[in-house]
Amino acid sequence: MSVSPPVAPLRLDPAKFRDPQLTARGEARASVALAGLRTLWLNTGTLCNVTCRNCYIESSPRNDALVYLTAAECRTFLEEIERDALPVEEIGFTGGEPFLNRDLPAMLEEALARGHRALVLTNAMKPMRNQAAALLALRDRYGDRLTLRVSLDHYGALLHDLERQDGSFAVAIEGLAWLAQNGFRVNVAGRAAFGGEGEAALRAGFAALFADRGIPVDAADPVALMLFPEMDAAVDVPEITTACWGLLRLSPESLMCASSRMVVKRRGAARPAVVACTLLPYDPQFELGGTLAEASRPVALNHPHCARFCVLGGAACSR
Image 1 (tube, helix red, strand yellow):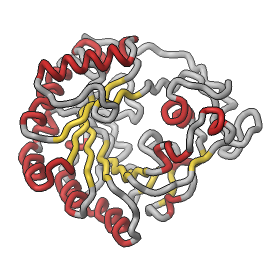
Image 2: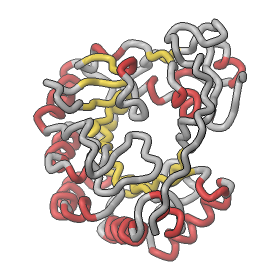
Image 3: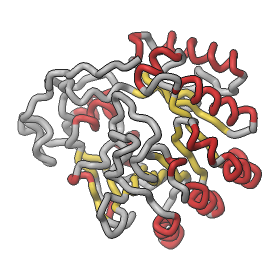
Image 4: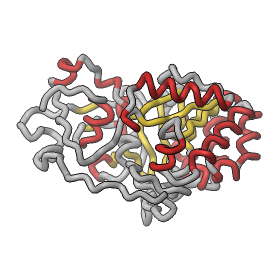
């Protein structure tokens, strides 16, 4: 089945998200200070074995806008964490598909050996299974300190395959079951609004799937089964002002950029760079420097994703 995504009209107000200091209405834009670096994400490269219809990072078998990070480059940031006694607890690996990067096992080994937890975001397809021996060795040495979060857009094959490609659901489920059978700690990431179902129905559907396949993931646990909001860049969203914190009864420290940063390496760049978060790898205003120290400055919430994904999650403080 081949389905082309509909072309959505751009509904985002072009006057918004222009000035890092002020909103289109002239109000003070909210920013988030780094309260403490708890999670460092490493983007292993944007190449992926599948092309999804709505990939926010545009990963595909041809997109190498972010090239493979090497184990030596990874080590530089891990050494900075150790040298500066940064409070990093977890090293996350994302892509693209991280298992396409042949240095991934070495990077995982380095992170785990230094005492960090490691989290890998994967589609659990062939690239992961190709590195089964290395994964099993890491499991034997580090056990539950290694977590693999498998992407399943929906608990049914039809919608998952519509997003990714025909037959991808069956392969992903086989990979997820292999992880479970071999004693790995696994989480699952789905999509909150996919198929038009409410959260309760989605979690019930995933619970039935996990029970049927013998996969020990608690679908009621929001960490074990994360349901992420949609990332439709064509839909208008309000800008986040300093007043929104009080109106939404939300603390800036609850946002991702208060406790995490991501390392990327751009095609043609001499060295990696540190960006504000996993959602904004391409926007130059969110590139913060070449070291974790340089990247410790506050982040202005000057992008629709800041509102859509991180702050609101379906709520709104102003229009």
